[in-house]
Image (tube, rainbow, N blue to C red):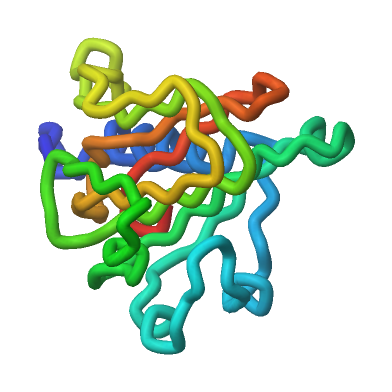
Length: 179
């Protein structure tokens, strides 16, 4: 961090980054996040008591339009410190992120389209996170579990996931500590 003449810490970039992360992760008003008692219920893969202890967070994304039109296009994202049981499932797609040590479990219930696992970098000129490259991409995923071996940073994130529901609603999940 830079210091000005008076020795005060310039927090402008830090606050801007934190606001950007908050906007990216909470910005979708159609997101429905399950409460804690719902997060203990098994989703597509059975979740053991051991995994409930090691799980960091649980996020659910489902468009109100899809629900109203009876379209199944739901995504559940779980983050783990240790390998989830879904890694043992032969049908699970395993992807490598930019780093390793933690895990993102991306569970599709129904169908989604335009899945992208994207690399992010901090752009000093724009004072914002920008997409650098696409790490992994799928045109369509149906009733599929993906596990990304990566790291959930406390600071500036370096990866995100982007996808669309069948009704065309776009969602983003920035891979960072606490989503």
